[in-house]
Length: 119
Image (cartoon, rainbow, N blue to C red; front, side, top):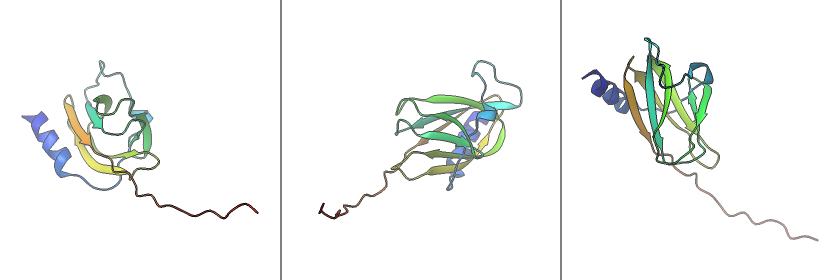
């Protein structure tokens, strides 16, 4: 029941600007009492993952779930990649649970620019 509540909180608390940091990383097999697992799926390979303003990893395989162990509680999650709009949310992580989130990043619009001809 608590894991379902955590997932609902993750979905409901979407907002701009999420960040994940290296200081929170730990092997997924060794989850401390006061921590939870954040399982992220993202459509963009190479997106950097930030928690509370610190880089904690990079999406290595688009659409494949990646897990990061971070302290339980409220955090800001942001995914960034050049050419894409930053995707961020406020998350509430439940201790001892796998908290899942799917992130769909949007490509930034591009425009054609005429360059001056060589003289």
